[in-house]
View (cartoon, rainbow, N blue to C red):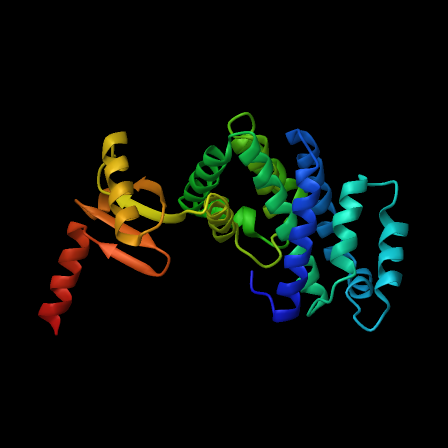
Length: 275
């Protein structure tokens, strides 16, 4: 998500308000409700261009925008949801779309905080990553879930058939919203972004590791320790087996690629010979 300066400031203010609300809750369930209601507002505003323009209209008085919000949602969502959204609509956003982007970001943050409080953030991150790999490996499934003309409820049902009873509730809510409201983002990239958000929540970078063979727990621990030492910050591993590498590892951290695979070395040798 790329925001212009005014929207970045608005989101920062809204995140502070969100943290105040979160600090006032003691159980995970209210956070789940808050996250789901924020997602519902994202869906509402995505479907109502005139409404999102009115709520993001910087030429109008902020009090007027807040009154519009309270009149629309008062009694229909929890008070804490209205409190967070009031901070959103009284701020200055660069565009109506970026206001909706901001609400979506707040919803995701809320749900990841719930997972963190429940001690499930690691598993949510791993489930998001693994589901992304599964979908990326099934072209027909990826097309079905990314089809903008497909019925959103049908796409959610398709996801449910894959994950029902197999993933944490936070994972399911995040994935359901992604396929219901992709907002121009492909499902595989969207899942990758969600997994990265979960890693960032733990203040860790993500290393995407492809290995020719399965790495056992001790090997993964050593690799994680080595990368953490190299990059001088905690590194979270996402490992997948890729026999086409023939041997070794292919590691991607951000824009940097460390290719220690046999296939990579052979490809480099062929390029050198061709030159």
